[in-house]
Structure formats: C-alpha cells, structure tokens
Image (cartoon, helix red, strand yellow):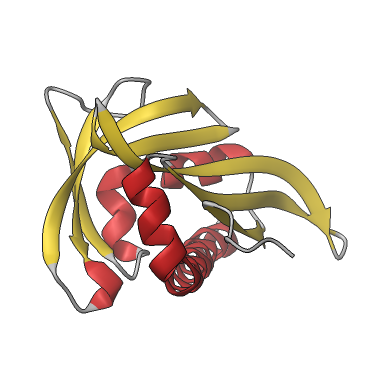
Length: 165
C-alpha cells in the first residue's frame, strides 16, 4: 500500500447519450455552474470563444462549496471532439492541476451510450506534493464526490434531453 495517495483521481459514469452530445456539454465551460458543486461559473477570456487547444477561460470557484471564493485562470490543453477535453488550472508557467473528461462509446446493461470519465492530475511541484501529503486524502475524497456530483448532474440533463427527442 503506497504511503502517499497518488496525485490523481477519477470517476466514471455511463450516460445514455452519444459521445458528441456529451462532448458538447463538457466542452462548454460556460455551463459548468449548472453541474459543479464548486465552480459556479466560467467565462471564456483572452479572446477565446470556444474549446480549442490554447483557449483561455476563468472559473469562479467556491472552494469546498463554502469558500473562499476566487477566480482561477484556465487553459485548454487537450481538445478532441467526441473524445477528450482537458484544461490546466493556474498560470501558464505554473499550473496547479489539470482537469479533464474522457469519452468512450460504451454499452452498459444493454444500454448504448458513453462512459464519461472526469479526472484530475495535480502538478508534481514540491509545494503541491507537500500539500497532498498533508491534506491529499481529504481533498481527494472531496474531488471524487464533486466529480461524481458533476457527472450525475450532466447525466440527468443529457438523458432528459434524449427523452424529449
């Protein structure tokens, strides 16, 4: 058993929606406030208007759902429609972490759809490692609960939209 929890985590949820439908939702950062328990809004910045590698946005975060409240600069680092959307959080020279969504066509219980995996990966910088040694087990659990909440809320929206079609 490792002494230090890995600097990563992920949660996967099956959704009755196509990878393209899921992609449209996860890559529209302006909608994150509908789903995330911590990031209650996001806006494109620096002339960016949509998802592409290098696009910039900022997320308005209420840490742990209670505070403090702050804006985080973000940069899209991977962008493959229908497959992957990832972004770094922090200044370009020193990102603190990366968040992303992997999308895979999947059938679960006889239902076709998409397996959506939300994940985070912290920077290996010494100060992040020190934080993780001290509080990683708590923050990791908080992140996993938040990712599950986010994905379940997205699933509800996508499956309700699919039922209306």
